[in-house]
Image (tube, rainbow, N blue to C red; front, top):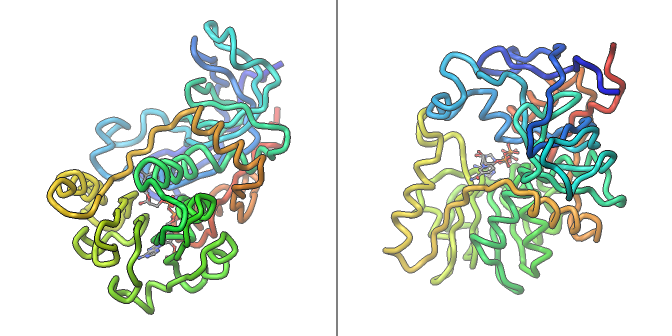
Length: 335
Ligand SMILES: NC(=O)c1ccc[n+]([C@@H]2O[C@H](COP(=O)([O-])OP(=O)(O)OC[C@H]3O[C@@H](n4cnc5c(N)ncnc54)[C@H](OP(=O)(O)O)[C@@H]3O)[C@@H](O)[C@H]2O)c1
């Protein structure tokens, strides 16, 4: 039987890890198109960090101005279905191993919308599955839909050691591309281990003219103007903008570059495409299949118990994580 209260990672305001507490909250009831999942693992990502910081400031209009109206953190999780919403008559059953994304997922239980949920194959660990819904979901949309990477192309991934970047490298290699990654020196060996043929340290080579020319450049971190990054493109190359949080000021945090990409694209010889990730269960299912086929390896650097969640999130804020960090809710919830 499900307990009436559960442990939840709660944020009391916007800021850093000092806002976080592990508290007891009422266990949620699934809505009509939701299932109740006993969470085993969650994987924080830059979306989780944006929710924690309440940034860019504009998102507080939706989240709550002074503090978040929904204080339990989210998004990506994996676990086991323990109850079904009234309208969930097919697709998911009690006992299914699942992964997906939801607000308030960083808790022993989450009421998860089935549209963003996928069943996890037996061959895939739940800790690995928890890394996929947001970071790998963004990466596959960048490689397949935005960049349309083809076999033999030269692809440059900026931010290759990060959560999205480490999946981008692998998916581009899987598509048959020759991949160069840009990362700090501390992450160079890790990026090579993902399949990159070459790694550039952005502190040593900061001018895009030094990087060479690429059919596809995907930026998850650099944040420089589009015209500067286009210097690394071949004549008909494609620039894909995923993100970079340190530009554009606190109100926009880089989202202005996404808008600019759409405005500039019709007027230049290059394709310039912003990525706006859509979370979907079908996408997660496709990624889980790639993991089961061993074509994609969730780059889990560490799994920490929920009592040490602050450590994991602080390392993400400090950009120290190689790939993905996972927080485990697998131990028994205290009564
Ligand atoms: N558009 C969308 O739908 C979407 C979806 C998800 C994420 N995003 C955005 O994408 C960005 C990356 O997200 P993430 O989850 O991958 O973050 P992350 O895990 O923190 O990774 C970012 C990586 O970039 C590296 N980096 C920082 N500055 C760099 C530079 N100048 N050149 C190259 N690498 C640099 C960082 O480490 P080192 O400095 O040690 O190399 C880190 O490994 C964020 O801005 C996020 O908001 C957008």
